[in-house]
Image 1: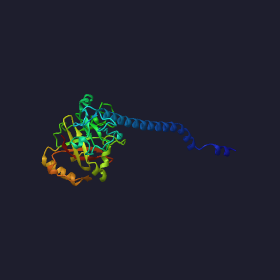
Image 2: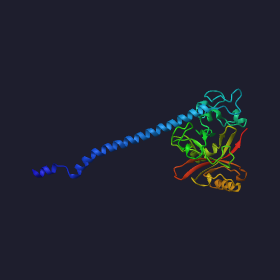
Image 3: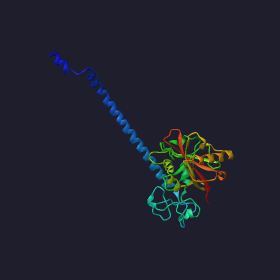
Image 4: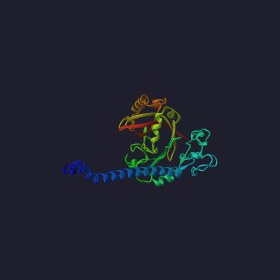
Length: 294
């Protein structure tokens, strides 16, 4: 009988497990709850950044500097209005690279920006970057360092998407040989995340034209190189010396992941569009040659 009672009693290990179970279960529940909270928070933050930049596009994009006949410089883009295009709204119709469009056929950018109102919101806005047929259509910020806009939107709201921003060493008057613009590679698809599409040859060759707009002038950007670089490498030098600049461009052309032929000796300036990759200290960059319009 004594033997039977001993057999019915749980082992020491089982008794310890039963005690720990009431401690572990709440911890697991808390961990799952925290993870769910983080996922929801990230999703909410991503959505907030998307909505913010959609609103910015809708509010501050206007007709091109050389507008279509009858259009006003201060008329916002609106879906359905002839000759007008909202890059965030495919229902607006039209192709910004279609030479039949008046602004492009007149050698102007296909969009305009109301910089007066935009800079009233934040006077650290120095330009606007736009790549047709992508969602790259953002104001460009410039602070006194390269950290402020890593996690701030145009209005100063904290958000992990941050803003597209110019390297603080670069002059906003575009007097440097290498104009460097940074943007996050967000999993939500905003900011510079679509730059990774340029690793595909077909996409690269079909999307070589972008635009950089400033309060004073518009520039067409011809994208000539896509490459992966070190986060601290020569892609981020400003190149005061012309010979060093030409040498860098030759090297970039030789080691590009994707490229079209261009002449480094005849290239006076480039824009470097930079975003993160999954490779730690590696970055993806596009090199673009600017041409002033108008």
